[in-house]
Image (tube, rainbow, N blue to C red; front, side):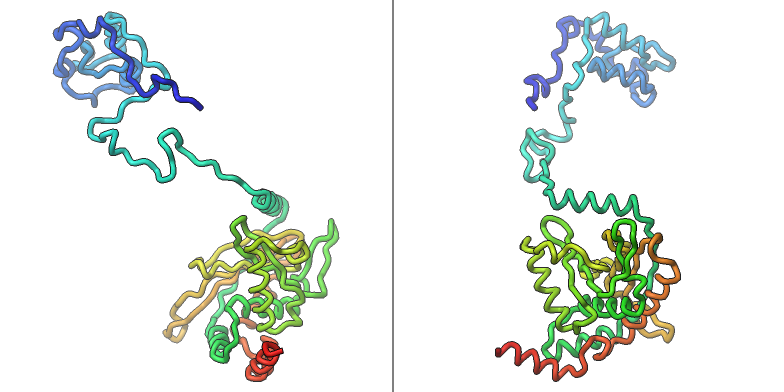
Length: 349
């Protein structure tokens, strides 16, 4: 869009206005009390309309104030035309033009930057809108003590096994879903189906938006295998190399924002799934015994038309128990040392 050549210039004052004696049109501000605070909004609007200052207009109102009629009479007597609409006023004297700050990356002629929206981001937005507008979201939260969870992870790290807190939580969720199959369900058209296998979608942030690669058959995997699969899928997601079967489907989703300092949030259900778990970061609180306690909030968003409230409550209770009582057996590892040896054997083959 081209800027008019005179857009940045104030309109020239008519010759009649320049030759008017000081005793008439240029009477000092004491003629109306010397203060603009007494001017009404309509008078100020007319002054702006004709590009005038109140000190230029002969005042006839109460207490020496300028009225609308004064402004109009002054403009008529001096043949002053209204300021063209859209013309810009110069900056106030206290802010030199040369020192006005400009946003980085923007030229003088541009005040915004066009952002390209990829097809992937459009699809994500469409699905989120569809989910929030057609699925009756209900919510439940469990606050879990993470002492055993963090202690078990530390033992894995000390043994040379890579596994994140999120990997452990994925296994905990799979165990809880196995005990509460009513939560592990998806819609097939208008038919609700309970899935016999736990396939967990894990939300991964990519340059083009959020995508949920699937860790298949989590119940049959130990936490070490889960960690390996998650890292491989996350790398492929960030590189845009996921195959359709690796992110389409799944029976349950997990979204973890704890690493970003988010303590609690609600997630939007990923249809045709019926539930998603939002994982916050660990926080330190005082326990009942007065000692520091590390906790994490897990918020379940579930489809109220597919999952009953009491089923959601039971699932959260079981999940809380799984998180607070993590051990080798629940993580699918019957002996950490033997698992380390098997990993070493796989690496040498």
